[in-house]
Image 1: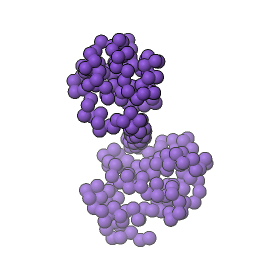
Image 2: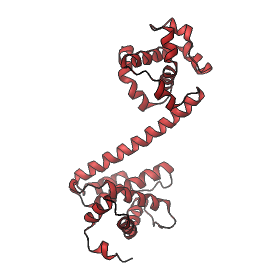
Image 3: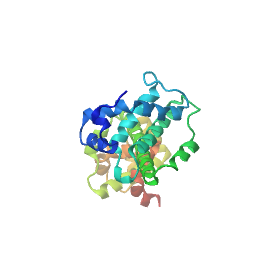
Image 4: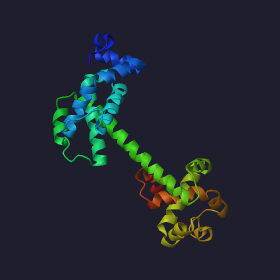
Length: 247
C-alpha cells in the first residue's frame, strides 16, 4: 500500500509528535501504513506467518504499536521504529504466555540479543513501562478479588472509604486490632464463620473501648480480610502500621 503524501513527506518522529498532539487522521494513516511492519514483528515472536485478518496476535501487536506511538519520547535517543518493535514484541509475548497458545515463541535470549542492538536508555524505559503495566494489571486483579471477598461480609470498597478512620493514630490502632484478631485462631475462625467481629471476646485482648471497636468495625474486618488472604499489594500498604505490633 502506498503512503499518503502527508506520511511520505514527513519524518516519522515528526508524525508521532503530531499524533500525540491529537492528529487522529495521521494516527489512522500511520497504523494502516505500518501493518506490514507490525505483522513482521509479531511473526518474529510467533515464528510463523501472521495473517492480519485472522490472527489475534496481530491485533495485540497493532494495539501495542498504537501504545508505542503515545509513549514514545524522542529525547530518549532511539528511533521510533526501534522502540515500537520492542513494545510490540513484549506485548505479544505477554499475550501468548497468558493464553499459553504457542510454546515456540521467540525466546528471552533472542529478545535479549536484539535488545543489545538498541539504545540502552530506551530499553530501560520500555522495560520499566512494561513492569509498571504488569504490576498495575496484577494490582487491579487483586483489588477485584478483594471486592468480591468484601461482598461476603456485606461490605463495599466505596463504603470503606467513608468509614475508614481519618486520623493516623486511629488507623494504626484499628490495624493492630485486626492483626490481633487474625493471630488468634479462635477469634479468626469466628469472623470467617459469622462474618462479624466477636466484640466481647476481642475486648479482653485489646486496649480499646467497645465504642471504638464498634465505630471501626467495618474497617477492622476489611484489614482482617487482607491479612487472611493472598493480597500482596494490599498487605504492602499495611506494613508500616503492623511494624510496631509485630515487634
